[in-house]
Length: 57
Image 1 (cartoon, rainbow, N blue to C red):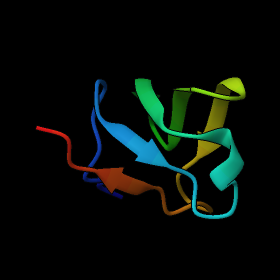
Image 2 (cartoon, rainbow, N blue to C red; image 1 turned 180 degrees about the vertical axis):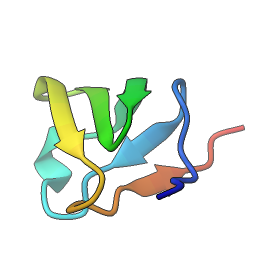
Image 3 (spheres, helix red, strand yellow; image 1 turned 180 degrees about the horizontal axis):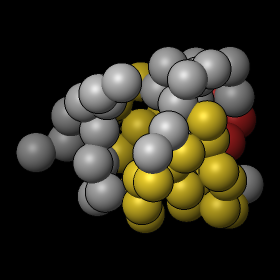
Image 4 (cartoon, rainbow, N blue to C red; image 1 turned 60 degrees about the horizontal axis):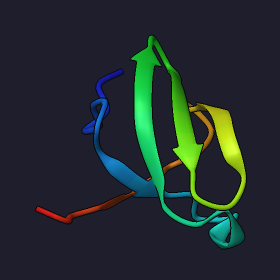
């Protein structure tokens, strides 16, 4: 499966808005490691969570 995300992108978790904005650190297969403003580093399985990409260019 192809995801329109890459390291460096900023994202929001749709069900965990309180985590704040996260920056993708790495993506390996379907697992993304993301550093969130308010909750630190999380590993998200992209098969189950559709992250909202934030365009901040």
